[in-house]
Image 1 (cartoon, helix red, strand yellow):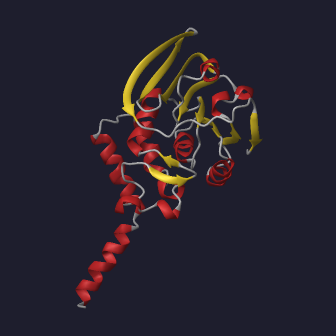
Image 2 (tube, one colour):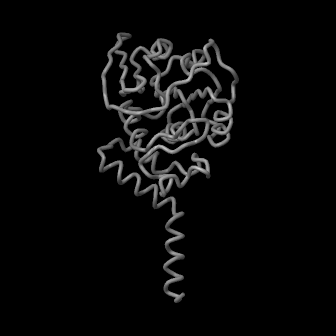
Image 3 (cartoon, one colour):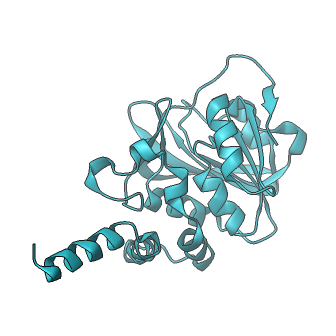
Length: 232
């Protein structure tokens, strides 16, 4: 093999694992796809998504962890594609300092993006193993517990916003009740055919707005009330 060929291979290997370049490319793609919220874009440009994807799943589909598609994280769950994460957060119109509840922590990626955005993050995950692993990846400022997402986190309510990363059959009443008087929520709803729904409270009155057709993993219920374990 010629020296120049070896150098070319070395450059390819370095670029393959140059995740900062991958993140920048991801953000550029999000902008092309219509994402405009600078708070969301800056946060997603900083959070290291590859740290929230198990090594066995990093190169699914023959590409890197910053590709615009979901990736498996174990237990039949996935980390959502970057565009969907950005789209949902943009629709919430978050500002730093707000109190936000996430349902379905998964690997912790979306919670990490929220944390980078400067909001106060509470996240619930029903699968204990995922909650423990996500808790280790996330900063101390993120509050995480194992519990049934259908119940939300009533002890910490109300929340300025709720983002749900898994699909219930219908909008959980408990989550709507845990919104502030002018709170908002975005979640996928449905089984075979799912759609993002934006829930907006205006002076305590509920408005529903249908949005994109999507495909999420179903929300799992423990079939009982209360949380299982407080992780942090």
